Length: 394
View 1 (cartoon, helix red, strand yellow):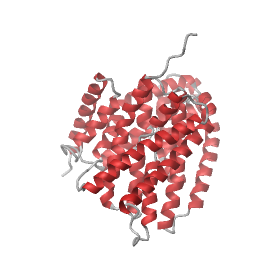
View 2: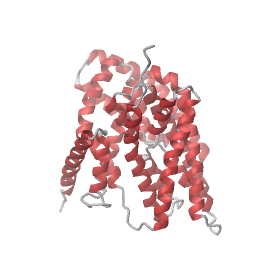
View 3: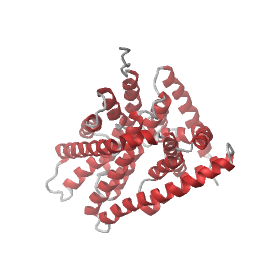
View 4: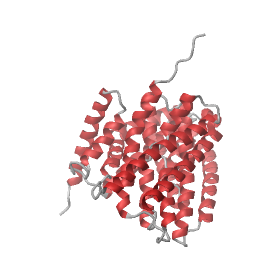
């Protein structure tokens, strides 16, 4: 007999995320904090009301794809051109420091000279920490009206580059564990992806300009634009091995300069996403958490790894921003905005577990670090952004 439990799960998730989201807003925190807490409470770690299912996984994936598409639509290309190289440097330094920090942390706690895979396992913990999930930062900056500013654009650009760097490192490391993986081929695919995006961008930018004239403020525009987003997401993941959210972001970038289309499409997609897909995505991060089997050693490892995860992103990305004459406050905001690991790190960790590079008893520790960094990012970001120095009137 077919089960309809998923309907009850959806109802509980939507009500809980909304209730705790409103509560978060009442205490001057972004609503995403409440949605994340709702997921932790509903998941197996606390009450166990909702468990992760294939339906929830796929629905939450649609949510993050739509969030990144909206982020692309909101991107100010003129500002991105100004911070493009800066974003690259921010991403590189912000990936190298966590890679080193995570590797050292594993070796301090679990070094095993008898294990030939010891260093690769240590290195892979560092790889997990290099990831950045910008979707929660995007939502926080959007709520605060800061997404299109210098900090928001730098964070978005750095996060996209970070995703590419993470894929390269992930491929290289797993290549040592699985000889069938060809790192050179993957790097070639990445280069081809950007060539593909450049060609598609020119062709479809002109096509959508004509659609905007013919179908001005018509719902067909929103449907075609969303389909375009999903197609690029699919192509990025399936044909180039690049995360689907990267394809979604570039779909938004291609359309962001068509002003009327951008505003109309964003308005329509916002309604659908924020009523259904986004709450499921944010809560799913908490639902993934299962803290059973924690030992005192793993708990200590988790705390140290968490501190490293936060500090290396703040210091690395902040240093990269300072090299390009960001103010101290802007550099701190960029660093804080890159703390969140979210679903990107979880995907990397799962790939590591499948390749035998992460012991199963360490997986809950990684999930805890991912969840906590995701929870603290919007809180810290709002605190930092609210303390933005006012320009002097002199």
